[in-house]
Image (cartoon, rainbow over all chains, first blue to last red; front, top):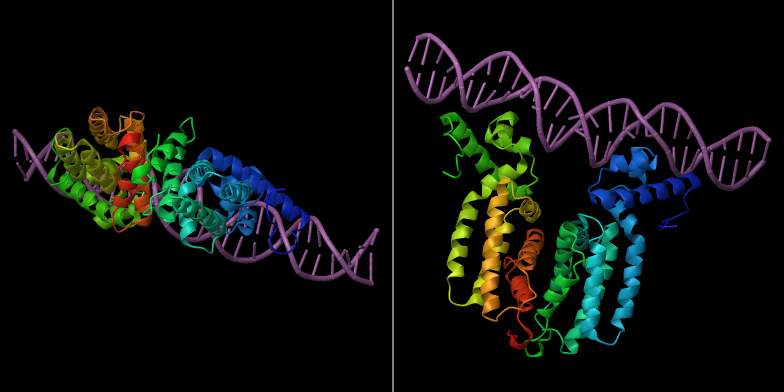
Length: 195
Length: 195
DNA sequence: TCCTTAACCGGAGCCTGTCTCCGCTTCACC
DNA sequence: GGTGAAGCGGAGACAGGCTCCGGTTAAGGA
């Protein structure tokens, strides 16, 4: 229902437990952030701690599992945006989406930046995709002369995460849209400012 | 030497211990962020855990004590900037300073935003000062027509903290100056864009 | 239907960190 | 140098992270 059974198929009880853990994790991560107690997640899911750790050796693995659906949706939407008409608005929409998704759970921006740095991890691969899409969208906007040349893909990704960090803390009603609009104006070349 | 002996003067041994704790805290906070082990700080400072907790009932109290000098310097520099010639450059300089100071220790941006929300705390009062200076500098730039009217003091403070958060994680060589310059361009009114 | 076994389960237990409590020590003042 | 208040410190209670291993169970063949 929610997760990729990597390698061979899981036994029925294992799959059941895995799903229960992921569902419970989403619940508790939402309430207490990604640093929610793993033992408590196991308890609430009705399994032992050992079971949780066997399925998800690290906290990051569990976080990644809790987010697979979101990440898949993001990749799809990002691919659409790369093909859309207005490169600047595409970047804006992408940043809004990035901020929205990365602010899903408290502490997630930290996890994402950690993962972006070390490619091997579970979150790492999805992060790489997000960074790739960010770079593609940026390059397109720059080629169209809509974004300054000294803006790098890393700048954009970093600022997206930074805004997401702020959003997880203040929970503004607009989900960070205002901040994204503010920041993205700074990307415009000097001769093309717009409201 | 470093800290305000609130209330009556401390006994000589108490003052000695307090200083040792603060000095050690700066060291370990610098290495491991503001979530460094308090017991370890006590151990390294050569005091018992009880002593540490008596002087600094909460972690935030210790963080605030470790930062008093920085905060005093900031207040002074901020006051100077409010009286300086170019309102936009003053804001830029202030943001650079804010980012630099708040990125002193890993995890500090979180602590600052927490403190900014609840005025009672030790960090809270210095945060209030920083927010006040931010608001003053912003208002001045807006009156001069150099910053858009829909930018709020909260936006500026939040973005400063967000950039500081990014800086604590990536430690860019320029201390976040590039990001500040990028973001602050977005504050300019539509008819006044500049590189 | 039963048997076998690889896969899986779960919680006891260890480690590290937080924070409190209270008997002992030391400073400061007379 | 005597006295009392101020201060000390570490044992220990508690919580979370993570592991290890004896017991359990699903799944597939006879």
